[in-house]
Image (tube, rainbow, N blue to C red; front, side):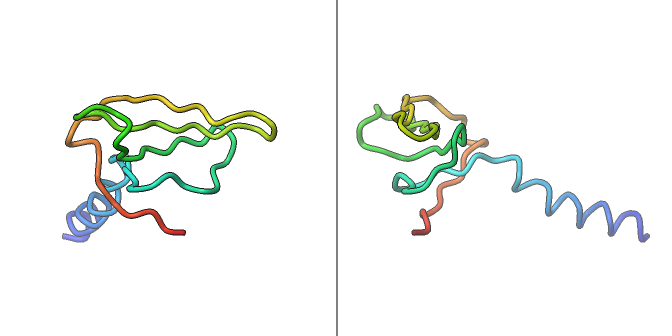
Length: 79
């Protein structure tokens, strides 16, 4: 019984970690090579903006990519 309870608790914690978080606005701070997904009007319907952080002096890399519905969860960005 303990094993079953432990397995259910672990799966409840691990399952949300598999999804990509889609933000509503671009984050101000982004570590080098860190990736953020943003729901943006600059991308066509069904795609999100993928932003990759860069080292000092270089611009961030931005590209429109598509995500499967089961891989993405929409949340608000925290300032």
